[in-house]
Length: 103
Image 1 (spheres, rainbow, N blue to C red):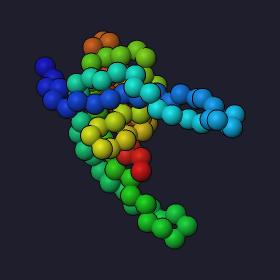
Image 2: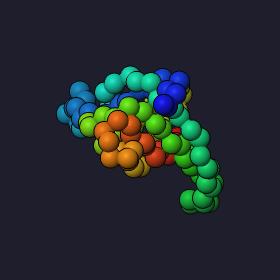
Image 3: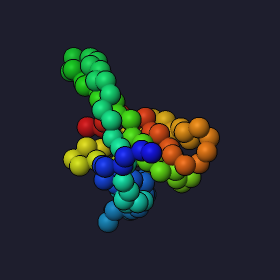
């Protein structure tokens, strides 16, 4: 039995046009669900002389067939990019997401 104690919002990118006809991307809520969010490691890298920190997370939730790596997770004030999805034990009961915090 998993204990899903963290409320998250699953979001999907949508494409629209602004007032000038230019394409813009916005994020729409796909679903609000219970999950378990587990912090993982943090990595630092140098990009153009600036130190960037990327924090990794594992998110466990009840199985959904509609999630892709183009979607993201909103957890409190954090936005997590989905890097990978795993159907735990192949039973379509739980899904495990590997995520990276996006800044």
